[in-house]
Image (cartoon, rainbow, N blue to C red; front, side, top):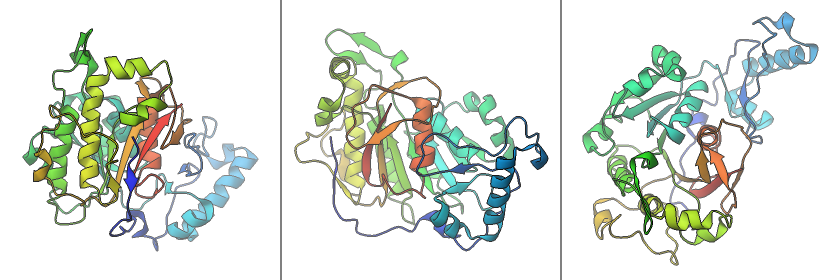
Length: 357
């Protein structure tokens, strides 16, 4: 399934360029950058032997650290990015960007939130059971710092979702990785995996869109997590996975079709392909989208992971609008979102991107 593009009706200024004249200051020697030309994870000038002192660094590390500190102190961040190809400087004193994350209690949303927080972002998480995250060691430091904000609520309740956008703080990014939990489903020989809420992803997207369209300012960039193998892109799956997707995962993937159809309907620049059928009526009943404003989302990224696993983040994966891949870890999808889909990156804006090993 490939979303066609039409010229965007307007352009949106990159939030990270608003402060382009500000100088970025970093405490040496611990420096870590997100480099757009590499997806192999961030490197740091400090290692276990550094002990926080530049005198413990190897000569090449010391030269690299000293040069980088000089550049980041005296060169404006916009010039630094354009010359060195660096998007973010972790540990900088610039104001933190703010993301709202749905589906962060587990899976891709969880890992995306952790990655963003480790990069200096502030994240607001809407959770039905905040205790799951408040007791998680991966979030403890960020909760203490006030950068991980846990809000009790339901993504299917308009008031709960709207409340996340109230206040003076700008929202730079919205991520939704809401999806059904396979462990809660039942298996049928005829229909494959049947989830108790077969339209959970589509319904959550409709609630979110209804809130985003009513904001008094342009909606922030929206990232949604879908899947590979939907519609005509089923033929791009590896042969061994085609029966799995066409039978066992057919139900959950119908829900992903409803998700994509809904957010593309709201996009200014993406169009549902004419040769792709719309979602089934049990997922998106006829007329449901009449209550949603069309063509209002300036920036949308649809992330289509290969078959998801619980492996660790490798930082090494392939990305393309048309991709044949077997698997990808949820941790690597989180890293991809936090490094390749943030407002400073434009490659996948208003596109559907497949990610896999």
